[in-house]
Image (cartoon, rainbow over all chains, first blue to last red):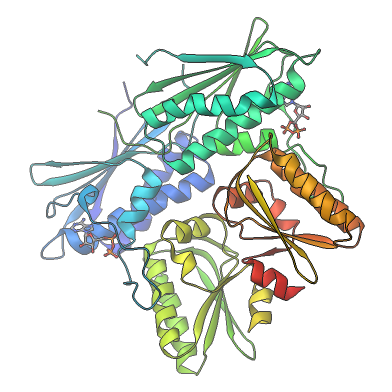
Length: 143
Length: 143
Length: 110
Length: 110
Ligand SMILES: Nc1ncnc2c1ncn2[C@@H]1O[C@H](COP(=O)(O)OP(=O)(O)O)[C@@H](O)[C@H]1O
Ligand SMILES: Nc1ncnc2c1ncn2[C@@H]1O[C@H](COP(=O)(O)OP(=O)(O)O)[C@@H](O)[C@H]1O
């Protein structure tokens, strides 16, 4: 079975994102992600974390936990918050056909996550939102 | 354990590549690869198959087999030939610093495979070369 | 992230390098505001050495472009490659900006 | 793959669309040869609608560029995005060609 999860919990704030990036970097290195994939992983994490910081907590203060586990060639990442229930898989996609003048400034974070991660899983467990995804670039087969 | 392998064997010729593309497409769809990843998978396969067609067999004629298995969110691909022993992981990388006039026309196939697939596994088994790789885009976690 | 500005006759060239994320995208906003307040009509963002950009960076590019457009100017991009290129393509923002391959080309076209 | 040629005063624009693979890259070689034999100095390959290119296609681009260079001409690329862009970047071929964002920009620069 998979290796146990490494976990880091920090306040859900913009200023925590880089610390989470450094935290998952060890896992990314352990599974041999190349630099391009590491940047993509950082991007996905940043988008999820920024949204939690901005939208999850009514009073604007709360924590977020990032956990990862390195399984055979693959990084499992799980992001957990205790904010309002939000399933990004149900979010309406933005209208990408609008011209410059009409294009709203924003609404692209969830889209980027879904495009990069492909399939994403979401579950609501008690008062928690748990988003998870696996991050290998196409990898080697494992016997 | 993983699902059993689907297998297709064809002559190692340029003209077989598109048939192999169609063959792996079903596996790619089964694991939910998006269109961008399918193109990357096609590219990796084409590069490997073209090289086998061009270099593997002394007398220029032989077969190649592509096998795939769809495991939880991940496509395992295995390419087998009976040609001369060739481990692409040992191939010297081309010199990418050369200018237009000096740049050899070629030598980029193995490089592309290694860059896209990240880690690749090779084994020589009897008289066979077996190249294998896993092709998920970053995918969902599986319970 | 580092932003290096060079003043040309018809535009300001902003060479943005490194990583543009939620924490520092505001610096790009400020650089744009500064040059716009000094009368610049066209800003050229050279992204050839930009390694990473998240959606907070995209917001900044979009906001600056809309602001300049309302002043009959423009935000022009060049050097778009790697992950930033992919991010612009995934969000279809690449169709909303004048884009040139190099800063030289962008300047020559003004 | 489809190749559509348009003759301009200073260059031939070849709009290459679809998938360029080992089986059909030779058609691009032939199109280039044809125009070179008719005296074309500069060919512009517009790849905006090229969805896929493998290393056999890269060979064709490189060969045409070297051929044209020896005739004091050039192979100019434009519209490079998506997977083809990534393939050019991974092989560092993007540094060996004059590249423009659009065919219009490429033509204007000649
Ligand atoms: N963690 C979250 N909790 C609640 N709502 C969220 C969360 N993440 C995103 N949203 C909602 O989804 C919308 C789209 O998010 P996103 O695509 O990142 O764009 P933006 O944040 O720029 O609006 C947000 O405007 C917000 O309403
Ligand atoms: N299946 C193979 N069997 C034997 N030699 C191979 C095989 N694949 C590749 N090679 C060798 O590796 C070299 C590099 O291959 P590649 O990167 O695809 O470039 P190219 O085929 O254009 O030379 C080839 O020139 C060939 O010598």
